[in-house]
Length: 127
Image (cartoon, rainbow, N blue to C red; front, side):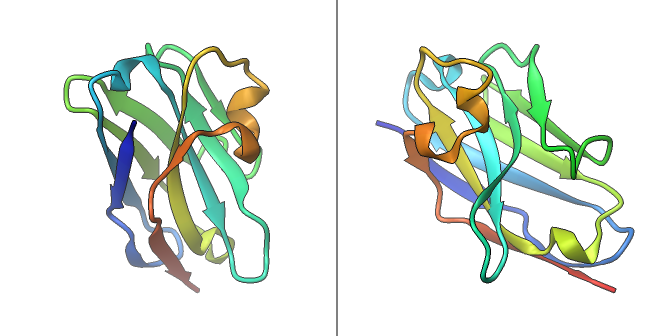
């Protein structure tokens, strides 16, 4: 069982930056792949970024590639999402999620394949 708690959301002006954190409980955190998803009002939850257990492989949605960076610290049971050059269209509730092995690259981009979810943190980007 894994519990996830996100933090770091808030209100920021366009062009600004934020770093989201996701603290995980569970002794086997390092074996899970982790992902960030987001959901804007009236829209479906969408993939943002994912990272394998080693941190060596990362994946991004095209809409955030080059602006967001996902990383993890297995010693701290924490995964991060550093967001730069934020745009109003990045406004959403951001969710952290974990998926148990085995998984594939495609698995990491599919919302339905994740096993555990956090409660979400609001990110609002003003123009």
